[in-house]
Length: 408
Length: 165
Ligand code: FES
Ligand SMILES: [Fe+2]
Image (cartoon, rainbow over all chains, first blue to last red; front, side, top):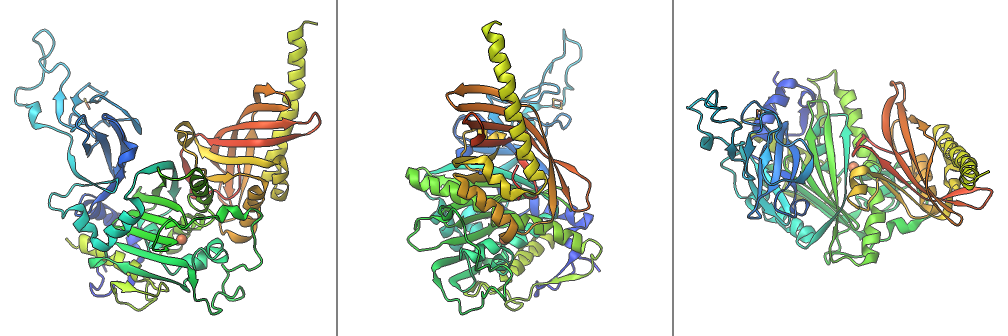
């Protein structure tokens, strides 16, 4: 049975092979990472000046993201057209043009091949073959678009615009959080011991949040009994879930005896950690949004973070967090964000379990490629919206989106 | 005896005291005596675990960020009660300190460390190397951290960090 052989009308049972199979991994590189999706490349504030660059990965492909002299952000494959050496070796920096150190071929900040060392040879001897026209060569380029300071790129030549790809509901949450001058308060990176899709399932899993994360439940940062909803975009690709802390309709379901994660006698010596202010008029205190395939944006009280999970082979992945503040923050607000940041990242009171569970599932499903997970919480359909977050609909949506690309 | 030798000798005593203090610190973490870990800090102490990249870019958020001893104590109770992770332990190797400044009863010191992590039955692995950047209060008898900034050499943490460094 092919692991891709799932019923296209039912994404509620997923073969475990999707997390471990080498062929699926290779296909995914083509269809998802090189294919019809917009990929997060970073924030424009990471590259404030002409010549600022960063290197990263889109799937397995090394990429350079650079601001050119006209102020435009470009992205191109970080692989010299000569013999494949990395053109940029550093993670970040500032350059006038790009030089491959191996044989000194140079590129402009759009990625066009500008010069070949000893192109005409030395004293008339040697030199590049006459049929090699350097003006026809460039580092393969990604199309780049920016929305609310978020820079995305794609290898696909026929993608809808970035905002059409996200759709209006997804765009409005991005605007709500990021349509203002933002400040980068820090980055975290952690290696995870499992397939990238296990992490994306976790991001989209509204069901686990209050069961796995004691800290979240005990301090009522999120309970499924709070008012909220989960939405997925057309075709399942993206999702958004949110809740409002002041409206909790708990009728005893979170009784500490019933739910492991609810610890009623647990208190903090320094409760200022959780001090927050009502930053948004809508009252939203928790919002998690995933943008297909591997990017997510979240607001937890006043911690605003971006997460990107990059595959490193079928069995490993690498997660980067960007922690953001607003330039207009008062010193007190900035201090609150920094304190609340203890909730997220590799050492986050809430986030640490998510990293761990990826490895545990990998180990659990390793020997069972043909067995299937069950994603039937909240039914088997993929409605566009549900007021109940006791639901796996956004995870089913992920598989619908993924399958749609893989079937191409 | 010339002055500089006297001060060097004084330094040697001080170095030894800081070194002992640092080793005790590593000992309570490695031997799972975490309830004693907050005692190393003053009431208003700052404890921060950050990465070299964030530190050098002056970016303030921490992998763990505590502004006072209460927050430091909460890290211990959370990992005892609230958080879930696979059982694991650390083994710190801590270098002798370098004293970088001294003003009144406050010292600044920098110390290199390596921390190995053993997760259940797996082989030990290098979890983190880095440096401690400390501000230490010396009342003549006892030392206490007023600030300990743990700067990890690598930006990348494997899976999670629950136990402090
Ligand atoms: S590989 Fe880049 S110049 Fe030769
Ligand atoms: Fe989670």
